[in-house]
Length: 149
Image (tube, rainbow, N blue to C red; front, side):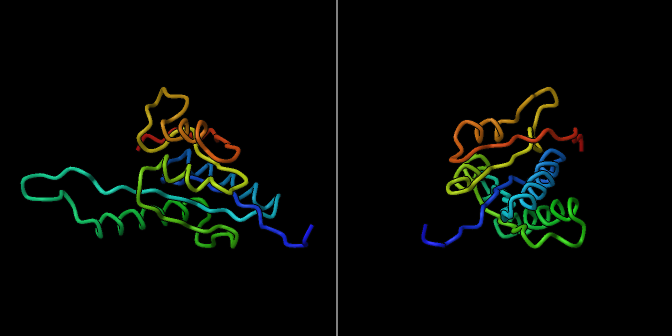
């Protein structure tokens, strides 16, 4: 042993849904127990549809909306005082691909059982299912409350 210590890393997918908020709470509690840092990861995508007049929206505007929604989701969990061990990471891309990539080198990946686009009767959302199948570390799927907004 060379004496170098590596801080454990818990990655958690956050999309503002009730299940992802429960996942963030769970990850923060786990981090307190294990001395880990929490990387709260939010993935956003620019609409890919292009009409006759060009792109349907401006990428900068979408980023600002995603950033605002992400911050509001984290604030909904922790209030105005976010724990020091929680880092917010906003990444453009497909949520399952972003989370699987973020899981590389992590000690744990935490996701809600379904996200914003989930079907009410689905046990697992498509993102949580893909993460469970392809993550590079152990995965915890947290059961959240129904979000019907």
